[in-house]
Length: 249
Image (cartoon, rainbow, N blue to C red; front, side, top):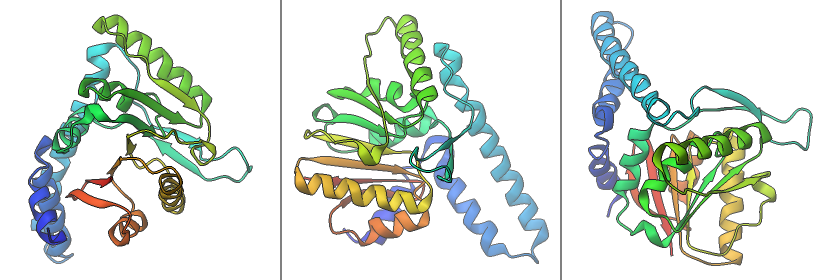
């Protein structure tokens, strides 16, 4: 399928919080220009209300389960250098996560779910709804790994479940990726330059140990988006404006 047709099709798959309307309103605001002040004010008001709704919905996961996954944290992206870039962790909204997973046509039970930059564990816990063969969170910051473990215990007590993720406390670039079918979830975990390096590292690993893989990227920075658009390694499955899904068989 032509990429433009796929992008138009997948725009309207963004139904959570009227994501398709958020995209169109944001584009309209840019096109309105600085001279159309009244139109810009109307569009700004509509976009602000949508963003406020998203923020309210983001609190419901923790409210329901008693976990603590929200709150932005600034963390180092490497322990190898004192001047390593700092990046902000924040959890994915449960509505967006479910929308993305439900859009994937492949059966998810075949795959291990791997969250790159898993933070406090929100995405890993959300993934427990979808029947993945196992759950993995890869996180550099030890404090966040400890919080993720506590959140898992709280989640299990609340639900009566037995969710038991593998928490990998280490630098993604030093992690030896297991050879098994995997879905790699990127919730914008790195600064732009490191994101491209991470994608290249993932491709090298999958080339050396070939196995089926899915790549889900939410809010890909522009350089990463360009890299994926040009890649012959990944086959696009979904190309929604705020999230993308690729496969590699």
